[in-house]
Length: 289
Image (cartoon, rainbow, N blue to C red; front, side, top):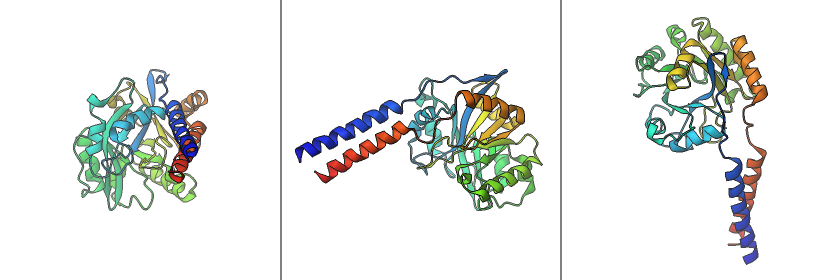
């Protein structure tokens, strides 16, 4: 019994040590294309103290580990975690930009309001919610706008949107979801030529942060630079399986960047091994306690 328990403890500690080593954030420099910085962002992230699984003060570190330069904390209809995460006092040198936001979740639409400081009333119409976001200096992004998430018939909303989630993990493996995202984007882009294609993970608990992401061509690596780039449509949406959507010249630039530095895989082999070692150790400890 004693030997088994010792083995279990060793396995658990070995798994924790390996996981800590391989999951350390990697140092990276934001690349430039011409005079613009190309930041990698995830603009639909949920956090604990709401409907996410990771504490807001840990999300910046997780974002660094996933090679993200900017994230938007966007819990459903509240900003508690977003305000904590965006507090400059909590930021460490090298941390990604953390933008406070909200997923405005209404019966007829879901929308990420990024760069706001006051909660948007979910009882507003889509057009009213977008205008309220703009009044605070934020940008409005249609969230996973499939038929089940966006049923607001207001055509004015399509022209007012700053961005649309063109890629989303829910579309991986679903031809129907891919078609609906493409159709919604085309419909909105016909009314707003500068519409930004956005890739987001909609991270809650199990999905991978940055599985789908956005490449942002910003004049400066700051919250203001990111929001201005979205307003101008200077983005490329990455779909997690190599798909890229956006202006052809920017897509080619992102293809070159990905060829040199591809996004992290959905799960590092060493991280998986660390998890299994840890699990084996815990099982041994439970069986021979």
